[in-house]
Structures are given as C-alpha cells and as structure tokens.
Image 1: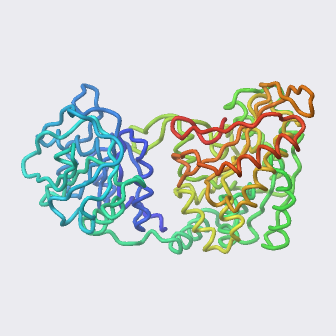
Image 2: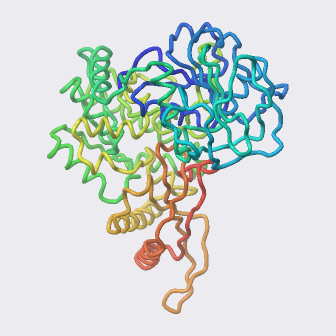
Image 3: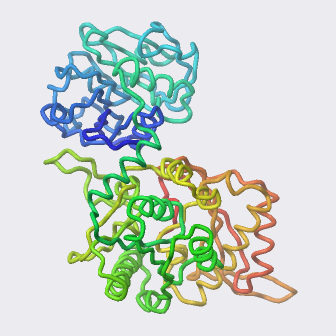
Length: 523
C-alpha cells in the first residue's frame, strides 16, 4: 500500500453512495485509487496523470437541466475511462448518443448476457449476476461504440469504444451482489489501464514509516491511544518509525466498556513493551456533558476536552510538537462540511456527523497532526496491524467510537446511565463470544434509551424501567451496513440475561435499520 501521488486510478464522484466502494474494490486489486469531484477538469486530471478514470453512478438523470456534468475534454485525454451507471449514461450523452427514461426500471439482481467476451468482460461468466439500480437507459450509442452485453430489460448493459479506450456499464460491478464485478474491475485496471500491483501492505508500511520520519524528524509525538485497531496499529507503526520519540497516552474519559482500561494498560505495558501513560479524566469529561442532549454537541465537547487534556499532558510530559491520530478515510469523508472543494477537485462528503478524530478541534490547535492512516479503509488497517504483529484480539476488535458509550446513551450522559449500559454491553459481548458469533458481524452493541420508561412485570411486581436496543450490523468498511440476521436463540439469551441481571432495564428491542438510511451508531 504505497501512497502514490497522484492516484493511480481517479474516481469522479457524481453523488453515488457506492463511490468509496469503487475505490475500495480497485484497491483490492492492489492498485491505488482515490475519489475526486466531478468538477475536476481535464487539465487537473492531466496533472494527476492517472492510468485510468472511473465515472461513478449518481441519483440524477443526465437529461435533467441541472444534471451534473463532467468536463467534456476528459474524453480526449487518451486515458482509459470506465463509466458506471450514471457515468455510462453521461458518457453516452456527451459523445452523441441518447439516454431516455426506461420503459421499465431495473433494480436488484439481473443476469448479464455477454455479446463480446473480450477486453472488459474477459473471464466474466455468461449469465453472471450483476446488480442493477437505474430508471434510465441508453437508447442509442454514440458513433464508434459497440454493445458488449445486455440483460433482459437493458439492451445496452455494457458498451465500449475500444480504440478510444472508453467503456461503460449500466450495472454496479463494485457491490458484493455483482458476482462477476471484481473480475470486470480487474480487467479494467490490469488489461485496459495496465496497472501494477504496488498497493501492498508491506510497501505501505515502508512508505508510511519513511514519511513519518521525514515529517517528525527528531521531535516528539503524543499519541491518543484508545486500544482499538486504529490507534493500536498507529502506535505500532509510529513505534517502528520513531521509537522513544513516541509517547502513548491513554485518556480514560469514563466512556469505555467494562474492564477495557485495565486490559489495555496490561497489554501495552507488559506484552507489547510500548509504555503507555494512564490519565484518569472521567470526572472532567462527565462534567462537560451535564445537561447536554444534542449528539453533535456531545461529540464536539468530548473532542474539545480531549485536546485540552492532551495539551495539559503535553506540558506535563513534553514538550510535544505532534499529535498522532488514527483517522481513516471514512472518518474524513463522514466529517466533511461540503461535497467538494471546487478549486482542487478533492472529494469531501456531505457532513453526516463529526467524527471523534476530526470533529471538535479548536481553531488554535497547538499540535501538528500526524495521520498516516487517513487514506486507509478499515480492512486495510487490519492488514497493516497484522503485518506489524498486533494480536488478533486487537486486529479483529469491532469498531468502537471515540466518544465511547456517551453516544450510545440517548440524551444526557450520567454516571448511573453509564454503569447501566456498561453492564448490558458486557452481556452482549460475553454472549456473542460464547456463541462464536463475534467475528460474524461488523459491530454488536447495546444502546440505552434513558428518556423512555416502559411498564414491565418482574416477580409479580410492576416495573417502570428503561429499554435497551440491540444493534447488530454486517459491513465491509462501515460506509454501508445491513442489520445482521442474528440467531433467535442468541438474541433470547442476551435479552433474558439483560433483564434479569441489569436492574434498571425491563425491555430489550432490536434495531433492524440498514445504513443508509440510518447510521450504525445512534448518535
């Protein structure tokens, strides 16, 4: 995973929920890719010198008056281009073909029948399943284009102008439901763009170590260690790069899960031999949340308090010039304020929520940030962690938000509510481990709804207590997620233990919302 500049494959985003997934799929072929705005000009792309360009899907119709358009000069760059869904329709329209509202939309799985098995569709099986999601269709092709494949409802499901190296597919090869999708992507990356497999874990580590050394020099770095896979991988990476110049500080903000602070200190100090300074700041953080119910305000206050604590620790232990954070690519995307920077063309996603690493930072931040993981997806971080020697209990640890249990309590956070949720959460973790279910889901946790009380009956007596929500999701990178079909017996065991062992809870419910439209966390 070297971090080449410019990106090897540039993705122009037209608003698709799958744009980041396209980047991730290309990276799975060991070729680096990055997402940019559809505003990116041909001149800017020429400066980036990518070996290939992908135009993403999007929610618009190309014939609408306000439909997003790309710079038409990109077709003349001589760089191979793959248009996906909306990207294919835009290619068709701008080059003289015709796109119309389809007589019948096509959504979900469809069998792809290949008319030309060479080039883009090499090794893609006849009749393979591809994922469709479109209400428009290409009625007529631009001059010089040919049809490569069709489905029952879509005559032009894949098209090409091989001489100009322009390709389009009406389906989404990047989603897991498209059985032959990765083969198609590999064909584009390797056979058409002639990519090289330089995006490897070992190369990323080598490059990141070198870049950290260049950035830091002989100065010291303060790392916010949480014990999760991101910060732990970062700690191992930085320790390899700068050794004793790194000081790891674990800030116990009081929002961790039961027994985790003790476990973290024991692992790093005794097993990994990476010294960690323990700071108990739970009272400080809890005082910042008195009366606070707004989720964004919670995150910002927690993020701001983190910086204040680090600044205090910096003065006590320092001086330090750098603050290291385990910020990942999805963190950057989800925390952005606008879609794109129109000047640079860099992709920045619509703000969903302030991430704990990049939200709430004061404008006069006295540290320079060190974030060598900010271009990686979670699965890539896990591979880096494994290569660096982290144990599987950390590498495979389910994602845990920086604000911790504070954003799994809806409404005001109090010590009593934290203790209740900690006990319920411990039961969830114990039972999914006992059932060997931990690694079958992306995240599994409990959410406390203390603003709601419901009537129950326990021991022939009426109760009036809180409900807890169980949240189990499957995902590949956290960008999208589906609710996990948890075995009923496991759910029953968890629910039974919670209502019997946690006195303040008398009801357990299950969240079956996917992302989108929901988020994985409740706040």
